[in-house]
Image 1 (spheres, helix red, strand yellow):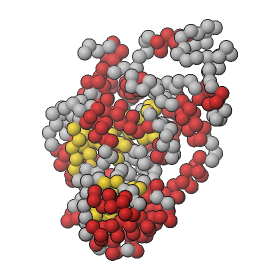
Image 2: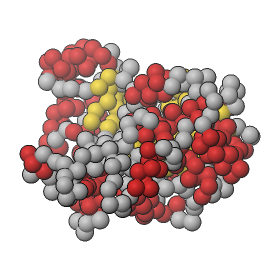
Image 3: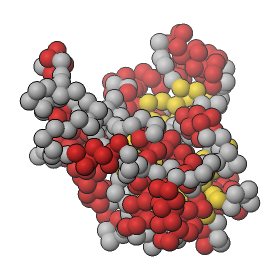
Image 4: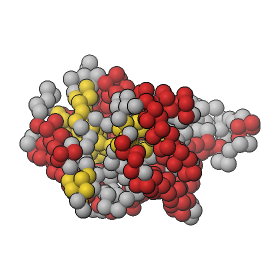
Length: 443
């Protein structure tokens, strides 16, 4: 396919700033651009004119958006913030505000350069746009073996990239001992082994998700240092490394001694051969699952304004050609919430609710050592979920819990995922008791 002149201009800017980043882009990524000519440019030129017959919406005679009163009466937003289109890369105010919030939530980003966030239709769409920009059919995405099943739909079925996994946790025989107790942690050795394998394209794509879905695990600071070192070493060997960072559950860390910032802090200036792509959003962080507002942010050592603006333009072009733009009313509501004086206290209150449930689960497991005869809990310290590994067939157990105990769980090929985030605190004890009884009956 012959490249559009606008795509060539962006590619030239990327190549001039860092040729490695151009090599990281997929064929689609190299070809995409945000159209600054055509309809968008002509509409921009008509702004402020007495008669503007370019806009693709309907306006009343007073130039306000046409709206149905039955909808407007249920909205507490100005019509312009509810009914009009948002720009494809997102509203300027929400992009600026989210970048400021990233710096506040991640002190390790201070003094580092990274792009302005581009607004996506939440994280699934952000991941899909990352696949569009970086994944070709001969590429492989390296990730832990405990992962969200939607990754397969996104990267394999949509873009043809293979998923290649390594065991999420260290084996019991190699687990660290603290206070005489054996503890399994993140399997950095498994990640290193995958990074050492040759790739057809000379590019390594790695997907990290902390807190992890389904496991509910976030690494320790020491483990983050090891992960960063492994990825940086691969980049310094000459590999082109793209690290996709799924930060859906960012901020929900419930134990001391666990890394509380995004690993994006450590990777965004790790190497000129390593591009960190942060995919995050309000969905889980601010409990607005149906709003569908996420963000995609880039960071690389030596990145400059020309490089980041080109990546933002390509991302905006991919979004425009995919869904046009993200919900304007959702963006408007979030801007108002984040700018309010109540936001921080409200968010802390909801964090405490989830932490109480996390603490309750830990207390239940500690109080019932007999449960270990029927199932093992995998390490967890954050997020929405935890996992157990039953001594019986996990799918038979899931079915029995549904049929005989009115209890729903998710089977992940040998383990069950339990969402303590969605389980009332006073029913958590019954959840584990039901699992224990069902395991005994199946055994």
